[in-house]
Image (cartoon, rainbow, N blue to C red; front, side):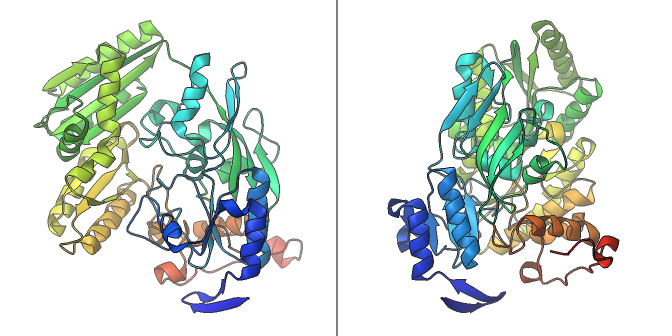
Length: 495
């Protein structure tokens, strides 16, 4: 075996034995080692961070995932699980001299059970393909990230993804019943059960949203829902973001829980409209997409209430989708926004934070001021119903603006915490915001999280350097450790 000196200490470099063992575990045809091929895996959707892995393996079943993980564990090789690479926080950033375990060849829908309303899937199945598989039975899968055509259920589990309809239907954790998981030592276990519950600690809940740091999910059983009887969608324009934000607060205050409430500012609207021609008003300051679903009578009554609230707050244009085609067109504009921003700025950071609904106007005003101070534009498109912001910080690499943009993006995330929110709603912490975690959590909180992680992965080989701050990443001193009384008594042992 050979080693090289790195910032964090001596790091094992993959030798011929490790490579051949991994090739035997997954098959020679499922290994990528040429420099050009490896470059395809150097980053996820957060392209500002790039690391070329030493090797990429593409297992085809749970057994070969377990064999690959066991090999890495036995030889002390760090590894990162990767789905579609659509993450936006650097959560799938490889480790130099490490291995990427790609799950793209585990793409089968294993079962759709219309009686118990559930589906079992391999992790490489895309979010939208779950609904396509369930549709013949009058069922669908509720969580719907904007990237649902390409993002995978394995990545959704890792990040606890939500989407536009999370206001009413919740996040991935509310819809996953059980998972088959490969732990960091290569053992295969099942977390959860037929009802999503199991005796003892909620290990299913611990694993979902752990950003790939506790193991690799290889099968997922999710809950399916019946297609709603009625769906009503409207697009409303406003002269100010404040007016649109007040509409959101008033809708919720009226006891109405829409399936979705989405907001876009003018910059995001211009980008989306140029890209897909969804019928948005180019001159409006802000637009709301509001969708209600459920029983026809209830939906009709609440829809009239929503229209009245919009009009009370100075709605300048109210477009109601008359059929499924018009509804799809409205949503096409909203879901195309992230990619469409590339038309007005090929370089941008996508941030993800949460604030209380009542502070939406305030935070958007502060973001505008911060962008002006840095000389950068910020487009805003977000899940207004639960205050989940997605500011897009636009910059030019050619003009040397990347460092300023990265700084502004970080400041926006930390502003959300300052205003009573959180660093992330659904994109995760990953590499991008690990150093900001102390802004939201105290030393004891972070120490507890770190010990949970150590219980699963004491060797720290599974997606290292993500989620939790480390001295290597952040230049901070580790927090104090206070032994538990049972540890002092010799009853338990520190990992």
